[in-house]
Image (cartoon, rainbow, N blue to C red):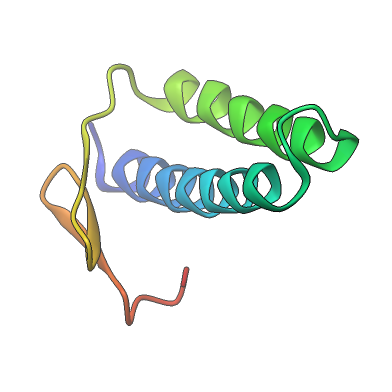
Length: 81
């Protein structure tokens, strides 16, 4: 993988993490059957599909304070948060 591909994958994973967070909050606030929750979940699923088109499989590890995509760490201070 080239560094450009790696950066694109990292960006896609960052977007996925954001959309997963939004989907989780929407489901918690509105319930799983609400249109907002369904739309947020669909957006997260589409983001995952796009990320997997760039690289498959993608290894992501979550900790309470950071998300790791391969050897790259997206810490709480990272601009995606």
